[in-house]
Image (cartoon, rainbow, N blue to C red):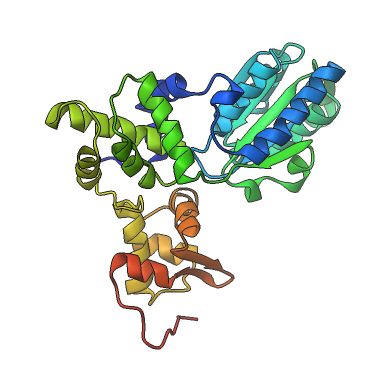
Length: 338
């Protein structure tokens, strides 16, 4: 069974869903109120000056709406948006091709910006600062630099790992915003809108159950909504009720706090194999058979949000709340491995 939070699944199965449910106007974008207020001031000021928006960096856990915000910015500025990602830009020529094909006022959105290689980052510096593109032609003593003028454009970068962006690149963004996890009422409002768009009949109690188990993340909430709808159509009347939601979540092995088997396995590994921690990320990855990046990008943000996990200078530690949630006894002496 594939994981609801598997980032690969997002790229194939639900790409059409994401586009269908993506808010088209600011008033449809639920949550992140403080961010929206500051961002709208930035956009309105740029429109008054008749200038492109300053470069924007969006960061935070996956699935919180960074791509949606980029589209809304483009819509507000009435301009085109070109979309790419860090892994897709492998060579300098790839970036040069993208930048030279921009038209004045265009927005270039780079997702997973933390995966840009350092050579690409260095090409971006003058492009962002002075709107020039420096291309080296040839090699050795005969090599020469060709400088191309670029049209005025805005770079919007999104990342789940802002710490992996180099300091010189981060400093070139005029505005940096962090997206936070959503509240349960916000998630419930989001999936209520999604249910309407997808012509899904749902009772408030059913939507509430989905919201509680959605890891405070709109993308996951929308996917759970689809899975519960499928179950309701096959095993029920087609209406999402509290009962159908509970049965679907049980089938997906998602508990009342939104934890999946991978989350619980990670916590159990820390508790049972490392006496609750602290444990280094490499040791934890080896013991749990998970990639380090998967632990840091997929599992940790929500476990930290719930207070089930702590990150210390010596490693990861399971909290008393994690023991209670898993129904495991806490160590009597509260001793941790050092």
